[in-house]
Amino acid sequence: MLETQAILWPSLVTVASLLMYFVITINVGRARAKYKIMPPQMTGDQNFERVVRVQQNTLEQLILFLPSLWLFSLFISPVWGAGIGAIWVLGRILFAWGYYQAAEKRTLGFGIGSLSTIALLIGALVGIILPLWKTIS
Image 1 (cartoon, rainbow, N blue to C red):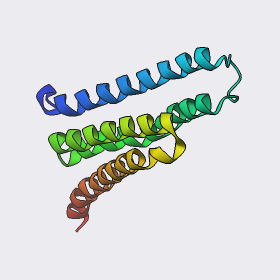
Image 2: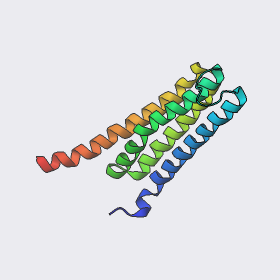
Image 3: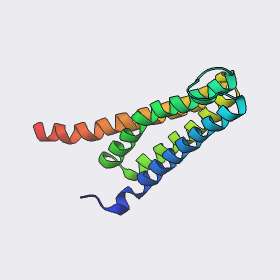
């Protein structure tokens, strides 16, 4: 059984990532009104399409990020997991900020987020495989 104290930091990062996604989703609604693109329409103004792409890409990344964050936190370290997770959130904010301005400006944030996810995923895999290896050897 996990103690609540042990999972406070990854829990905080989880809430931060979901709040960030919520703000990005609100930005889509605001962009719809600003550029007069009503549902179900998804195309029209290039600025609107970039806002929608930020939301869609962030949703795609959340699917990989959240399980990686929690597996890393459980099998390696909740503090390190939260630290790497916080970097992911900052990377996604930079990604959104850059992409809202121009598609070419999304690269730095995307790279930071991707490297963070890779670190969490590989760390989780190592944290799972090492104890398994010890039990079978």
